[in-house]
Length: 91
Image (cartoon, rainbow, N blue to C red; front, side):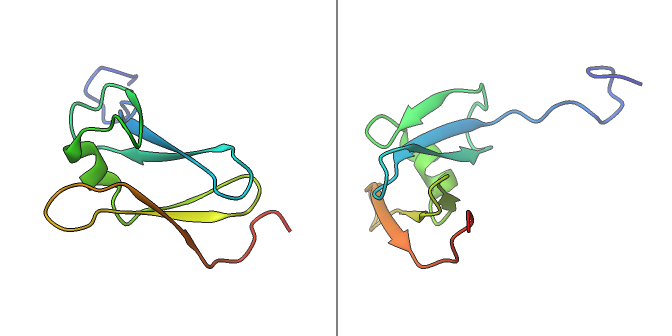
């Protein structure tokens, strides 16, 4: 059994949306299995609506410890980065 032989251990594919941490400016990655899943990378400005819908409500954690949630507002996709309260992960 190996990769690609139908044995059930194929590596999962996904696309990523990168946002800037409001605290330190580093990138935070959000992954989604919605869409083509071709390992594409997007920003908030260029992510298609289906990709944004796939990460909506997800919370990402920066290396600095800041937590950020992505939200979609209304019937159209609006990209909003909302810092959320969480325990610092690097303490």
